[in-house]
Amino acid sequence: MFKTDNYKNKTVVITGGTKGIGLGITKAYLSLSANVIILARNKPKKQIQVKGNKALFYQCNVRDNANVEEVINEVFKANKCIDVLINNAGGAPLINSLDASMNFNNAIIDLNLNSSFAVSYYVAKKMIKKSSGCVITNISSVTATRPTPGSAAYGAAKGGLVNLTKTLAVEWAPRIRVNSIITGYIETENSLVHYGSKKDMKAVAKTIPMKRMGTPEDIANACIFLSSVNSSWITGTAIEVHGGGESPAYLNSAKPK
Image (cartoon, rainbow, N blue to C red; front, top):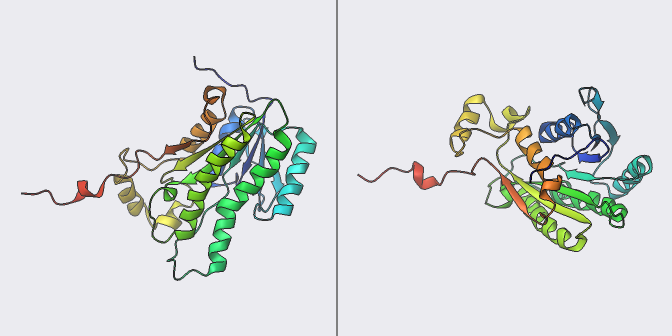
């Protein structure tokens, strides 16, 4: 039977929760009356809130392990518990692998893989002994499952994140559930910078079986499901939220006469 969770007394930590997919996730949990805490480098221009429920902001560089440990300790001191952790911080510009420096590649892997491991590690250290446990969701990408020219380091990191998820799920069960979401093409406030124009975005949407790009809310809904009692037997999995993926290339090829 489907059950409705009460998030009113639950603490949800979201990395990179001030914009894009992260902002959508933040607003979704705020709408459920959760105590939402955002970890990010830059404070939002205005406080993020939904119906008077305001998100708390902690400045944190998730690529700095010492800083992550310090901030997580502060969060626990104030809240005593983290019920849900969403590792969302990430991203990378497109660049040919031979044009990127190894310092660039290492930075991308740090942001998209190592930072999620670090935040999860320090949260798990606190939560593994608590009877209430914890739910961790890692935001991955379709680049984890297929070749993506221009995203070598990013794709490798996101693929590593899926594997990390599966391993930690086994190590930390049954107290802590760990899952990942493989996100498809998502339309955000920065989409035009990435895709070039509305026309280009429409062209991308046509390649998706659902004939539209995803929204941050689509990913947020998956996060909420994975942190709910309805998914209490789901751990170590990678849920694909991508509108059906990409249509096979042969469907667009010339039909034989």
